[in-house]
Length: 246
Image (tube, rainbow, N blue to C red):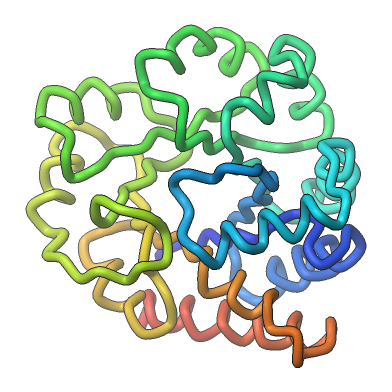
């Protein structure tokens, strides 16, 4: 069974909604949830996620809100935090990692923390049994891919193309996938540009997909009520899960 990872922006439109949505996603086929940490300059994210980031911050999102959301969600849904390193660094990594473990968070996804710098925190992650999800991009050499994936945990985030999330470029991923799987038994999940229409093609040869902008697009629709947003996100989950396993 191929896996579905869903990204949602924490605290948008509000904290209680994020909890309700997260739990609904866990019941509608999502295997792992990425709780996005709103940040003012999300360099790897496309316009939809960037917009949701800014809206959440304008509404007063604070890191403590992420902790409160996670306490309600993590015991019931496999939960990761996805954010930029400054958001975590400001919380003091030595204190944050044990707290994340206590809450039940199973990993972090930090797109702006290079592999070499992440090694400085390797022991801290290991001590608290928290995965630091590895990224591999098409621009990486075979030597670098081998190094990055050698001790990758939980899954490898395979960037489907060079760019930002949500732009939906199409590329032949098979050579890239083969070059990753040559060096690791860790599952490889495809991210960037994955939605209901592209999921079936993107997952070919991979172990799962990561969907973000397609969910956030629903969250940003002001003509939908909260319950309608949750329904549409749940339907999206069912469609994508069916597509990748059909």
